[in-house]
Each structure stands twice: as structure tokens, then as C-alpha cells.
Amino acid sequence: MAEKRAQFGTKIGVLMATVGSAVGLGNIWRFPYECGNGGGAAFLVVYIAFVFLLGVPAICAEFSLGRSSRKGMPLSFRVTDGSRRWDILGYASIIAAFMILAFYAVVAGWTLEYIMDSVTGLFKDTPNSDRHAQFASFVSGWRAVGWALLFLLINALVMTGGVVKGIERVSNILTPLLFLLLIVFSVNSLLMPGAAQGLEFMFKPDFSKLTTEVVLGALGQAFFSLSLGMGCLVTYSSYFSDDTPLVKTAMQISVLDTLVAVMAGVIIFPAVFSFGMSPAEGPTLVFEVLPNIFHNMPGGSFWSFLFFVLLALASLTSIISVSEIVVAFLCDCFGMTRIKATCIVTGISLVTATLCSLSFGSLAELNLFNIFDFLSSNVLLPLGGMGLCVFVGWRMKRSAYLEQMKRESGVPAFVFDYITIGIRFVAPACILTVFIAGLL
Ligand code: PFF
Image (cartoon, rainbow, N blue to C red; front, side, top):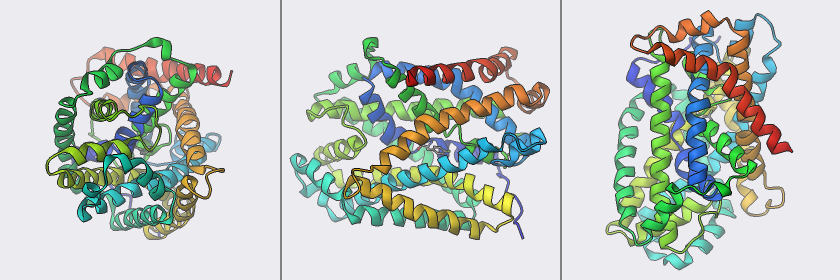
């Protein structure tokens, strides 16, 4: 027997759960290295443009579809369209969700190792010069696999226990705490000797650095960071109450999520230059730079403990939202119980996460980690986002999606035009252009 569909209890709970989904490794781990690879400020400018030109309208599109249909993937399309023609988009979302679960669990697992190192004092004992070698040896081994699997099991525990109460309540405390800590670390980083160089890298754009690859990277990063394009927000909004303000929530998510990404950059880049590292180091960047900062701070083990606990929890609220897409799909489409659905999702992810983790060691040639990361973020999410916008903008009745957004008061009329134009024209056209340019 399928269980009754959950519903978020409060408006602040909705905000914390959606911001909890958006804010995660995407901001603190992925953004700095994508930005570093993309030349810094030029990437940031394109990224912010994507967030507000495409991101906000696309969030509104997902919200309208989810709340009006009260279904996740792919049933929201089926119920709205009255046909199965759009199901393919829903199934692509499920595949993307599995890919993200696999590599996300690996990186989230790394945060657990760092929590342990902070407690045991290994952080303090390792000189900064050995950091790179130590991290490389850790990620290539079975210990990293173990942490990824543990993280997936913790995720499963929360999923079966019911997302809304646990996560809503926990997020209410942790999300503000994470912001506070990020401010403390930003200030600390600004006082470092390399601060000026780091800030210049982050905020002084050199547009000659922009290639189509960088633009595609910024597009993928915007979708990944806002949890867009794979129906996560469709699924979450199917749990919204009728009076949840959609446009306001979309704006709040976008602003807060971007703020966290910028703060992560302000923390990382000055430190990168202070320690003579390269900003284009890739996925391991944050895990090698941050420990260097903590190592030099008074009470470093304490700060690093706190930081990685919060990062682990921020990852948890995000990974839960990814799992929720698949769990809701299995419950809605096959009438499974939440527990059974969670067991299936976790079982598959345990295998794929192991393969991803070993991409840093014995399976380096296959490198499933990079393949999953690239395919999901840079291909499936933007294409899924385009499909969603085309569906809502052109297939769903205009009055139907606008009715969802117009339930809140105090939104100026031009905002609805901006959202409609964004959903119908700007988002599909931009995504298509970036894609074709990328292919060429
Ligand atoms: N937005 C999350 C992050 O930035 O870490 C990752 C994510 C969550 C992506 C949910 C996609 C998703 F559906």
C-alpha cells in the first residue's frame, strides 16, 4: 500500500528544505573549482547572469508544474498533459539523479574523513606541504569508499525516517549556522597575504578567458547548484501547501545560493594564492586548500571540525533531495512503500558510488566520477531544464502556471512577464545556443 504524500508544515520549513537542497557541495566544493577552471571573475559574471536570466524562471516553472499536478517525475508531465509523450524527460531525470547520487556520496564521504581527522588531530599533525600527497593517497583507497557508503546509509536512515520533520527541523538550525561560519571564514581569508590576488581573480573579469566550454560549465553549474533540471523542485513543490509563495521562494533560493557560492570563492581563492596553489586544480581543490587554512588558524582543529560537520550536513540535505526524486517516483509509479523504495535507491547507489570512488584509484582509466559529473551537470540537467521550460511554457496552459504564481500578493506585474519570457524564450534559446556552440 502506498503511503500518504507528505506536505511541508510551515513556510520557513519550505524555504529551509529548498535552500537545504540548493546549498551543498555544489556551492562549496564544485563552484570554486569550476570558477577556478573558468578563469575566475569571467565565469562568475556568466554564472550570475544564468542564475537570474534562466534559473529564477526555471525554478518557477518547476514549482508551478509540481504544485499544480501534485506529482513528481514523470507523473507530473503525464497528469498535466494527459499523455505519456513527455515521460522520457521524467526518466532522464531519474538517470541523472542516480548519477549525482553516486559521485555526490563520494565527495560527501570525504567530508566525513575530514571530520575524523579534526577529532584525532591528524590535521594539525600533517604539515601543509604533505597535504596534496596525503589527500591523493586517501581518495584512491578503500577508506574513501567506506565513507561514501556510510554516507549513503545515513541518507537512507533519514529517508526512511521521513524527510519533512527531521530535515525541516534540522535545516532550520543548520542553514543559518552555515551562513554564520562562512562569514567567519571569509573574514579570516580576507586577512591572508594573498587576499588581494585572490579577490582580483574572483572579481576582476578578463573576458578573453571565456570559451564555449567555460560558458557551458557556468550553465551546468547554475543548474546543479540550484537543484534544477531534474525535477527535484517539481517533487518538492508537490509537497507545498496551496499558499506557499512560489516567486518569492524562487528568488530567495537564488539569492542565498549565489551568496554561499560567492562566499566559498572568497574563502578559497585568497588561500589558494597565499599557499601558492593553482586555482584550476579541479575537484580536489577545496579539500586541499581549506585544511591549509585551518592548519594555520588558532584552534584550527575545532574550526575544521565545525566546518566539515556543517558541510556534511549541507550535503545531506542536498543528497536527500536527490534521493527524494527517485523515492517519490518509485512510490508514485509502483505503489512501493517509502522503506522499500529507499532500500532500492540505496542498494543501487552503493554500487555506483563504489565505482565512482575508485575512479581516483584503480578505476582511474574509466573515471566514472568525471563521466557522471559531466553527463549529469553539463548535459542532462540543462537539457532537462530546457524540456521542463518548454513543457511548462508551451504545453501547459499559460493561465494554469500563472495561476500558481499569482496566488501570492505584492509581486509587481512585470515580474510575471520576466518569468513568462524566461520560461518560454530565454531559457530554451540560451540552453540550445550554448549546447550547439559546445558541440561545434
Ligand atoms: N544543489 C545541490 C548542491 O549544490 O550541492 C546538488 C543537487 C541537489 C543537484 C538536488 C540536483 C538536485 F536535484
